[in-house]
Length: 197
Image 1 (cartoon, one colour):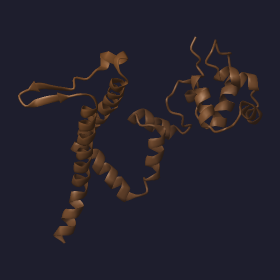
Image 2 (tube, one colour):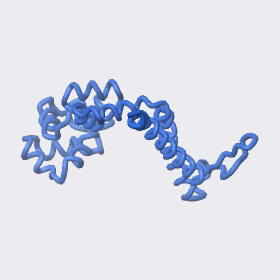
Image 3 (tube, rainbow, N blue to C red):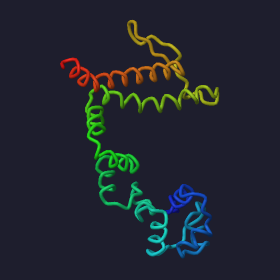
Image 4 (cartoon, one colour):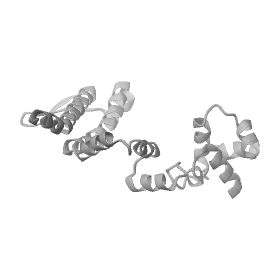
């Protein structure tokens, strides 16, 4: 049976160098129960609502997050709603809240996110993650034959498929160049305004 408190150990470890004994003392939950909750072996004990509430409050996360029901650790409803609606992480939403009073940052962010070139980059970034993993596995050798890239292969007249680290380098370069274009496109209206004055 899967431990429904699988996040408890991760949250505890992220919370700092606090020992299980210290958590027990601060929350009033017994050390053995905390250890059982955090254990990844065997069937977890039944845990009452108050225990879940105490641990969630101690770690500053929602009970739903601690139980694995929600992927949003925040206890704030507006943050949870924003995360659920956008798919963005809690930390990104929290950061966005910090810039709401800064019109220049909001304008810049809106310009970047609204930029068609930026939107076109996102699939490349997603692909880059896969290519990095495959290129590294390729480097590790013969045990990973199933992920070998074709090193260079002509796929049509004058177009070549490049594999391994070469493709990784090409993809990284393409993303970097496209980001330069985005910055240029986002800042160009400001430059044109200055030139017009």
